[in-house]
Image: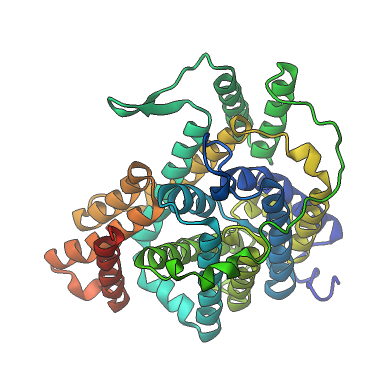
Amino acid sequence: MHKYFEFEKYGTNYRREFIGGLTTFLAMAYILVVNPLTLSLASIEDLPDALRMDYGAVFVATALASALGSIIMGLLGKYPLALAPGMGLNAFFAYTVVLGSGIPWQHALGAVFISGVFFLILTLTGLREKIINAIPVELKYAVGAGIGLFITFVGLQNAKIIVNNDATLVGLGDLSNPDTLLAIFGLIITVIMMTRGITGAVFYGMVITVIVGMIFKLIDVPTQVVGSVPSLAPTFGAAFSSFSDSSFYTTAMLGVILTFFFVDFFDNAGTLVAVANQAGLMKDGKLENAGRALISDSVASTAGAVLGTSTVTSYIESSAGVAAGARTGFASLVTAGLFILSIFFFPLLSVVTAPVTAPALIIVGVLMVSSLGKIDWTRFEIAVPAFLTIIAMPLSYSIATGIAIGFIFYPITMLIKGRGKDIHPIMYFFFVIFVLYFIFLQH
């Protein structure tokens, strides 16, 4: 095994790789709770059961998809990079597609499956890198920051810190509410640990919040730690049922597929470069086995849709594992093994509630908006589409809307500025697609 992963070449060993893989798992273990809560729309009251995904099935699907993606990345890509259902993409899936547009979750899974297949085809043909390069870097940063604001907004709502206000649309909630106070406590604890640079701070923050919630009887004490594995039946293969439904073939669904497509593009490419650079795996500005790493992401997303979860993508939390010593794909195998083991601890994890996960959403949002500093705000032709992309996501409660508005305004401002030659032809294609998206979205 050490020869396959070239431990000597990268100056590593089993101990460093194991610690690195464990560190990555602890840093991203929150997804095991946040993803099922998000996709089951647990924070939304008085919602028909038909719109909710089964919590237990999504939990197992999340663990298995994360394990599978990490295994493929470890063995094929050989990167110390773990995969799991992406934050932002799951929020888009649940709050924009299912809750906002009333699209069945089975259709949403079908859209994830199709986008995964497209990813795989484009990766195998080499077109994926060309499309990524065609999108201006400023818009990539804007999309990341906008998703960060959107996720934070969702977290604040789940904590009931921000609530509906008929006069002003939104307003400050009742901060004396016990559940809201628990979420605020969790946020403060997590911020303290993050500021201190504690690895796995988000995960530990959730654990501490759960314990405090149990002490004050806001959270039920679990009756068992290890239990039977929940059934995958409610979600397994549900994506395929959408293909026989004529309502799946609409312009709105095309917009959903494109959004899954674009956001995963940015997430995976950006994370891959960032983690590889941190680990010293970049050579002359290029990535070895980049194609294999992208294939890993494509296969994981497709398999995740079949299992019953939103788009699987590379996790920036892998950087925590790299900081702890991980340098090869063996660390990803360790992370995958821990995801598989977590399936048996469902009774322990199932007691985690929305106020407990809200701080995690808010903190992830903070981390994602860091890309704001990389946008050149002094250039108005860039500032306009970037700003509209960012602000439209939380205000319209739709990641898709933010991306569409930004991709429409970019060629307009650039042409007016006389910089038409700097616009890649693919961006004109996106312009037409998203204009049509808005025209037919109302029908």
